[in-house]
Length: 213
Image (cartoon, rainbow, N blue to C red; front, side, top):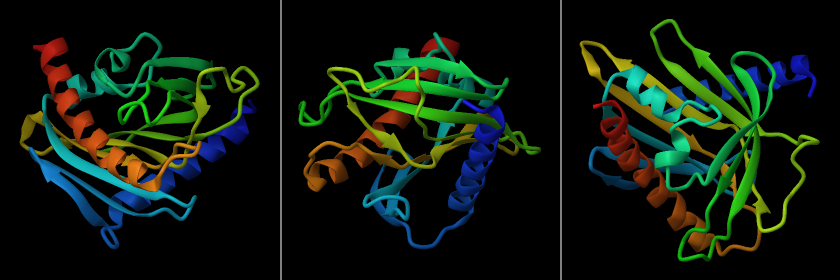
């Protein structure tokens, strides 16, 4: 993949994520509990929804980030029930890569296993915030494979933000923006994402304790 073109695409994705982060209008809350709020609004990228999650995770930003950072052999596939495997297909720079994520079946196997090929950029901001910024790409090393439906992530990612005066807590804001593809009832998709995102926060909190206490 052309590194210059990939860098331009990924920076555009990062700008979109910042807009999602700052734009407070049009979001409808669909799930709240245990300190986590999940909301949604219609996507402008595909005929589906953009979901936003927000919650505070007990643990320093370094510890939380260590559990989620996109790396081969990282912790994510050990604790995230929606990640069966994660692999780096191509490293373009120190902060930009092409990855493939495989997910298990879900929703009582109504949703069959998926795989996603993404361009992923890691950004660090002056206030200490770290973000992941991703969108789907095609890569010659990753043709569709048997047993998996190829899904597509539209501009999505996470922000990991330090809390002033609280070094042992981290605000985590997630944007899920996924076309699962295949022939799925919309009601299944609409119920899956809010539940899955709430589970992400609960499992991330457990992972921080498990791997860093």
